[in-house]
Structure formats: C-alpha cells, structure tokens
Length: 448
Ligand code: FUB
Image 1: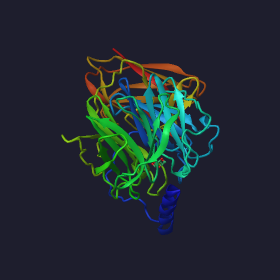
Image 2 (image 1 turned 120 degrees about the vertical axis):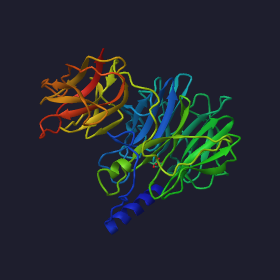
Image 3 (image 1 turned 180 degrees about the horizontal axis):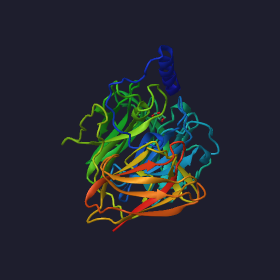
Image 4 (image 1 turned 90 degrees about the horizontal axis):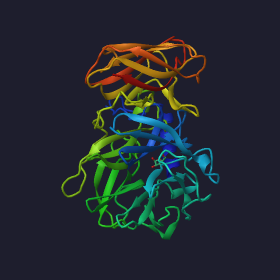
C-alpha cells in the first residue's frame, strides 16, 4: 500500500509541476543491463557463475508494471548474458496475473533451486527447479506464507545458516522472518515480526553471513531510498544498525540490495533510474540494475558509497572469443532489444543502422583470422567489427544477406585482419536507415 502511495505522490509531483523529475547534472553509472528495464537485483553465485535474477519493469510502464522475472549470467561482472524471463505470474495460477511481480530471490539446496516470489497483494509463493535456468514450477499451488498483512508480504530473502537451518525474511515496512523446513517449501514455527528492526528499514531485506557476522541489508526509508545495513551475532537478531552501503541521496529514487562474494571480491547490486534518464527527463517506474564492489573493514563493517560509481565494477576475467558467445552477451549496447524463441532461445533484435553492442575485455591471444555469426534477416545489412571504441579500428565487416525470414537462421563468416591481445569489441550495425530491424543475431565466434 505504502508503495502505491509513494509512486502516486511522485507522479503527482512531476505532473503538477511539469518539471524535469531528474536533475540534469547527474553523473550516472552505465546500467549493467540495457536491453530491458530491470530492478530488484537478486544475484546468486552457483559454481563459477553469477546468476542475476531481476524483476522487470515493462518498457511502457508508468507506475509499477511487472509481470515476469528475468535472468542474466556473468563470470566477469561486466559482460552479462540474458536468458530472458525464467518465471512469471503465470506460474502462480492462484495469483493476480496482470501486475505485481516484485522482488524475487533464488537459493540452491541439495541440487534444487528455490525462487521465492512476491506478488504484490497476493503474498509470497515459491517456485522450484532442477536448474538455475528453470523451468520453475509451483509445488504448492498456494502461497507459502499466510499472514494477516498480505500487502506487507513482499521482498522475500532466503538464507541457509551453516548449521543447515533455513530462514525466510521479508517485509515492508517491518521485517518478518520464519524458519523454513529442509524441503524449503514449508515453514517451521511462527512468523516473527523482528523487534529490532534497524533504523531506516523500509523493505528489501537481504541476509548473508561473512566471517561469523550476520548481515541484514535493506532499502532504507523512502524517499529517496539508499541501502542501509545492520549486523548481528545471530540470524534472528537483534540487529544493530551500522550505516549506509549506498547513501540515500538526491541521486536515488528507490533501491533494493543484492549482495554476493565472487572470485575473492564482494559486490552490492541495486537499482536506479539512470538508464531511463538517458532517454527522458520524465519519471516512470523503469529502473535499471547497477552494481559496485564493496569493501569490508577489519571489524566487518562495510565502506560507504555515496552513489553507484560511474565506472561500475572492474572486469575480473577476460572473455574467450574462440568459443560460442551469445549475441546477447553484452557489456553495453545502444538501440538494440532482445527477444526469445523456442528455436534459438534469446536473440538480439530491433537492430537499426547505427546501433551497437560492446563486449568488454575480449582476449584474442596470439590472433584471429575469421569471424562467424548466426543471423536471420529479411533485409540484409552488415556488421562492422571494431576495436576499443564504436569508431575504433575496423578489423572486418560481416555482410548479412536476406535469409528469407526473421526466424530463418544462417551462419555468415568473414575474414578478420589479424588482431592480438585484449580489446573491447564493438559490433556496429549498418543497414537501410528506414528499417526497424536489419537482422536478428543469435551467437558469434572467432577463429584462430
Ligand atoms: O520492484 C517492486 C518493489 O519496489 C520491490 O519489491 C521493492 O523492493 C521496491 O524495489
């Protein structure tokens, strides 16, 4: 309820004053996903990969318009591969179907993956899969948590302690928790309203343990919302407020933490409106996920960020161009969108002349001689392959012919001027300027 009120106030404020709802002088982080609006990041490390589940603000959303949950993966923190919608309101036959797919979180236990899903006004459900990529199924056919404050039952965050006891936390404007049984789809004991709710707590709890300390990060009091955190000696509190991981400042309008350790570093994910701000100065609920490295002090406290850094996280390993890479593996893109088909899975589409994709830190080693890409087109066009900048050195041009259909996929190959070492790769698209799409792209690969 509080959310609806919050958004209502913001929209009324913007519309009444007909003002730019965003300051023009802000220096923003480049959102880590650009092909869709993403929010409420829930990263999960499984094996050597980050699985980033997000909620999804529709492209035409004004207030919240959220019907499914997306998945992205990365092994280097800068190039993210889209896997499309892995769950949606349709997976819960008992829930409202047209809106309310809010902040999810996934956790693995004994080889199964449990995705805890809030449906605003319908409470919290759980989906189960044998794979982090889904498909996810509703094993209960009803909500997991029964309370008398269903509108407060949002933002579930599961946690498994070292002794194997699992917990589920959630809630706005209070933090609730309950023990989960080992099956992860039933509860043990009573729902507890946390009596030591930390200062500034609004919603979006995220629980983790590090070096014997328990942490509770959360979206801080609206508006604006930053990311606060508290620490405890126990998963059930009491929690002691420790400060802000990301300040609530004039730059933020809502947030939701997701925190992981990966390959020896720690990261905090959240969201902002920075991607939207690149295309309009009007406020809509169209958010985009950001991330930054976080640093712990010796006493376990976390160093503060005023806002998401402009440069974002550093790349932690190079990308191998000699294996199949999905076209939807992207560090930054302009103009393009993604879609999903049963034939090829997620692919890049709505490519217009002048659009481009950047893939960061590609290691060509001792050299490459050829490039191949799987594409479909009704018009044809070409891909200029450039290094280190959208207008950087061209190492080849791949001509894409008309394949006879937007789902008639063919491989196109071209020679590449020899290139060595590590470079950012830019695929710059060229075709008839009047076309809304010059080709669809599935995957690519270089050859030694
Ligand atoms: O994205 C919808 C809701 O807004 C989330 O569930 C909250 O955490 C806030 O980000």
